Each structure stands twice: as C-alpha cells, then as structure tokens.
Image 1 (cartoon, rainbow, N blue to C red):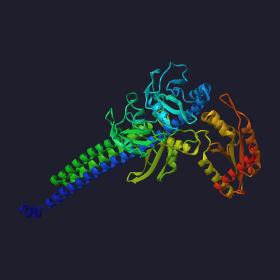
Image 2 (image 1 turned 90 degrees about the horizontal axis):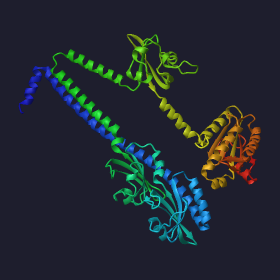
Image 3 (image 1 turned 135 degrees about the horizontal axis):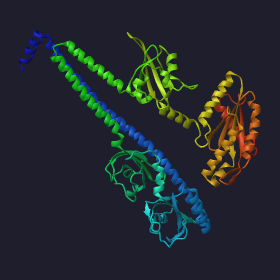
Image 4 (image 1 turned 135 degrees about the vertical axis):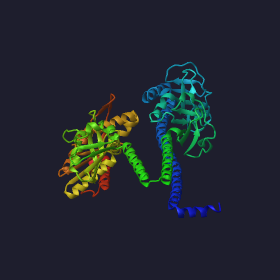
Length: 612
C-alpha cells in the first residue's frame, strides 16, 4: 500500500490516459452517490407527500360525512321532541305524530316510532298493534329513566324481538311535570341509514364508520353486517382522549388487518365519525412510481457504469461518442413516444409530416392516415368551430397556446388544447404542435364555476355572482351615465309555512318563487337568491328607476297569489326594498345595504308592499 501511490503517479506520467481513466472512475462513483442519494430522498419525500394528501383527503371526507350524519340526527331529534310533546297530549296525538314522522322521513329509513311507558312496556308503535312487549331492560330506557336531564340517547344496533331486524334506537325521555313518564324512540334501519355514507365515492377497501361514544359500531360502509354490535379496541385515540374533538391515526383493521389511515371527528351528539383509507391502495401509485424510479436508477447506474467502463477500456474515442449519441437518440425517442401529449409536426406547406403514439390515442388516426394531409381534418367544419388548421395558419411563426374543437376519427368531438412552436433548421421552417384532450378538465372547471356562482336549490345566481354583476353594472353606469336599481325581496310568512309543512315543501316553495320571479324579468336583468328567503333583482338602463316601482308591483302581485304544491295551498307575500345608483349609494355593498333597509321599512308599513 505504501508503494501504491508512487507507482500510480509513475504510471500516469508514463501513460497520460491512465489519469483520465482514474478521473472518469472517480466521477462515476460520485455521480452514482448523488443519483442514489437523490433517489432515496425523493422516494421518502414522495411517500410523505402522498401520505399527507391521504390525511387531507380523509379529513375532508370525514367532515363531509359528519355533517351528513349530524343533519340526520338533528332531524330525528326534532321528530322525537314533537313526539314527546304528543305523548303527553294523549294516544291520538301520538298516533298522528307517528304518521307524520314516518311519512316525513325517507321511506324504509324509519322502521317505527314507538312509546314505552314508565312501567317499561311498549304502549304505542307506528307499526300498529303489537303483542305486549317489555322494553324496560333496554340500555337506552335505563339511561333515560335514571337521567334527570333532557338528553338524546342513541343506542348500539339491537336485534328487534318482534321484527327480528337490526335497528338503532334514537330515544328521548317523556317528562310530565318534570318527572320521568316513559320514552319515545325512533327505530332506524342501519342498512338504509348507511346509504347516506355509501354515496361518498370510496375505494374498495376504504370505509366510513359511525361509532358510539364508547367505540361500538353503529354504521360501517365496509362489511357492515359483520360489525353490528362490535366494539373497537380501547386503545383508539378518541376513546383514550375523550376531550379531543378530532384527530387521525394509523392502525390495522380489526377483522381484515388492512392498515388504514383513520381520520375522526366527534359530533355534537357525542357520536364519532371516522374515515379509514387503506394505505396500500392510496399509496399504490406513489410506491409504484418509487419502484419505477428505483428500476430507472438501477438502469441509469448500470448505464453509467457501462459507459464509464467503455470509456476506460475503449481504444477509440469515436466509437464511444457514437455509442453515446445512439443511446441519447433512443432515449429522446422513447421520451417522445411515451409522452402523454400528442405531437404533430407540420412542414412549411402546412402538411403533416409525423406524429407520436399519443396523437393516435387522442385523435384515433394512425400515422399513415394523416401524413401529407392538413390539420383541418382534425376539427369539425361547421360554422363557429375553433378549427385547429385555421388557427395554426393564423399563427404562423408564433409561439401560441389555446383550446380548439377536436374531431375524433370515430366522429366524436372533444375539447383539445394545442401548444404551437416554430423550429428553424437546415430543412426549413417546421411547426411542432403538442395536443392534449382537456374535455374532462374543462367540463370540471365549468361545473366548479357553476357550483361557486349559482344557488343549487333554485338555479339562480348566488350572492357572489350577483355582487360581481352589480359591480360590473355600476362600473358601466359610471363610464356611460346610466341608472342601476337594486330590488331587495324578502318573503313574508315563509317561516310559518316552512315550520308547518317541513323543509322539503319549503324548498319546493322557494323554487316556485324563483320561477315566478324569473318570468317577470328580461334575460338581461339579474334575479338572484342570496340566502334563506331573500332574493335580489338588478335592473339597469335609462328607464330603470321608472320601471322599478312597476316591477315591485308585479313582484308583490305575483308572489301574493296562492302556491299549490303537493296539493297544499300555500299563501305568502313579500316586502320589497328599492335602492338606486347613484342616488342612494355609490358602490355595490352600500347599494345592497340600502335596499335591505328599504325592505325593512316596507315590512314596517304592513308587508306585501315596497319602499324606497
């Protein structure tokens, strides 16, 4: 070893290429260290990012599901409160309330509404007369009988003694003069209730579960029948830390052993909503990508070692250069062939020279079908179509990107996105077009925009879109002096109708109100619902102020006419406030506020009228 370095130096002096081989070998080792370090760091970061994405997805999913479940529980609680009052009034009132509840709530969800007397025996069931049945030994009955407060109790799934069906009992105590006088309860079918959770798009091994405060399964979307009555291990975080409102953890499933990331949240009712995402499935793409990166790195490392060995032992540099150029060309060709975007090469005469496989996937045309033809064939020819060929001709020599209307070989149409670049070389000027099918993304963007700007119940513009249009109208009125009028409409007597007939009928009434309002105005006017039973109409033009009161009269007259919905005759009216630009306010927010104040003045004058 002591003589190695002197011999190496002497060898390098005698053969200069030896030094080059040593440097190339050292550089090869350094590159491999960097590449493998980057691979390890990148794989770790990719999995961490994917894990965080799963955590966020589980959190969003559990919050949405918890809102759905709590809304259902609130509806059941409201029904029980009314049933408790009816139980005090007598059997006839309770029977009437039982029919109302079973008809108002979704079919098959409520198995029965029943009343247990203070002696523990069943005294009423919405199913009709039943054999004398003692239910005083049920846990929910014991809990409510011993509880001096007023609380809602949700039982674990129980198998009915008479119905032989699984049900979840949601119960409240009946208090007569402050003393326990029995229990009213709704028996809910867990299989039907679970349909609400199964509406969420879950992977095959993902699950949503509704749990009791002590960890018993109430609902579970995956293998639900195997979990009724079962309890989670006591080491779950939400059982150990009962004051914690929400959280997440990773644990294997009790029965299937699948490792999942669970996100959970504690509901106001005391129940626990949990969302479990199978990590093997959720991280499969990332892990596959990491495996592919490992394979590529192994391949790249082998390539580097081979290239280095070739350079070290090669007798001719030219042969090594040719080999490297060949490898590079194949690499670039592989990249082009595996690109997700279609590539279209066009000559100076606007004819197609070549394409890549992705182009055939997008358009349906093979290379021999398009060579020598113009890009006009890739778009429909009807008037108004964004023809790709015409767009390419109009942007000759430019770098350009935009959407176009595409025509598939099968005759189907799609929305495409094209990126045009110009390349100048010895062969002349060629244009390269990158194509992609963006139909789904554009449709999703349009859907997202509509959801953000339109009221889902009535289809009218919501507050955000209404405010934007009002600001635009005011801006235009400033540039070209004109008048803008805001009509603020609030329905009179809507709440009593909503309370009496229920939210479903109330929603139908709001839709009918929206339809009548739209029929009263022109397409260029804006009719919006800004929340609850409040609507806004925007008018503009030189005659807007004069037309405002005529419009108010039509609105009051139209909405004061009876509504017939589901054979129910409903009578409401409305109060309308008028605000004018620039007379009453100079900006959108102030103008809307003034219209709101004017509406309240109209209400003070006796409703079914309008005020400025």
